[in-house]
Image (cartoon, rainbow, N blue to C red; front, side):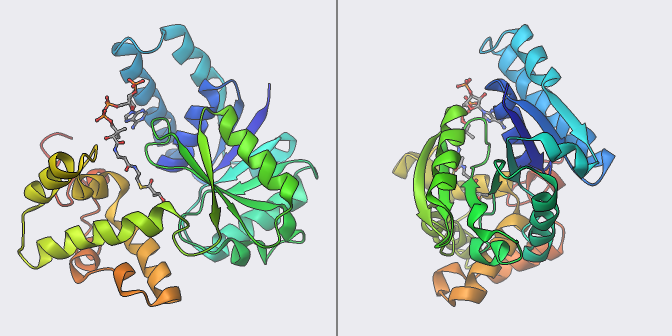
Length: 284
Ligand code: 3HC
């Protein structure tokens, strides 16, 4: 059984752990706080239970997946892993620290991937003794449902490492594309301007969130509207990601609008806080 370590147990980290456990991996989910890990385990159990209730999965499969995931607050437990994916907060110094610790901990053959969506891989890798071993393995939310993984390569990454990353993603049933180490990679470079424009339309009073989302679903065939999606992903995530891309590129299409900054300041982060472009407090 292949051994996976996931560093960071938020929605991306726990989604990656869940998907790997369902695909036969032995998983350790690492985080700094027990409370965060308890929340992650709960969220995995809820997601699996829904699939069992819908008849898409047998109870035994759910039990097996849950048993294959161990939670830990001790990074040293990741020493024997074959693959480690980092999915911590989008702060370059924090990611650099994680990888310099991991480099000293794991064997030379362990695949080291980052799930960053908005930071420069080259910058993260610059803090490593061997920057040729870091590759981007970028998943999409919700990880168990989204088929795509972007394999992001720096100019330095070894070809064999990128090939290993592709094989790892495929072993989870995902389809990969290659993406350059440039702001937003491929998917976010496409989708952020769309989502930010939806927010600008609300800000300018051009249309309501409901009408914008209906337009995208029924007029463009999107599975979710941009503002529903925004609430699912988290307004803070988009604010920090687009701010970081805008700082680097000064591309006006990536500039976070005032409404986004204000809502984040007010704690309206989407589903997770109960309020975003929609109100979830009744349904919580
Ligand atoms: N966890 C696990 N599985 C989930 C899930 C979750 N949170 N949400 C949905 N699923 C699974 C369901 O179990 C179901 O699986 P099944 O076909 O085996 O039964 C399948 O996904 C479809 O779900 P539903 O039938 O419940 O609902 P929908 O058909 O409405 O699909 C959706 C839900 C997959 C979320 C769909 O609405 C969708 O594709 N939305 C767009 C999502 C998107 O754009 N994601 C990208 C976000 S941006 C990003 O991730 C960038 C990063 O950098 C932050």
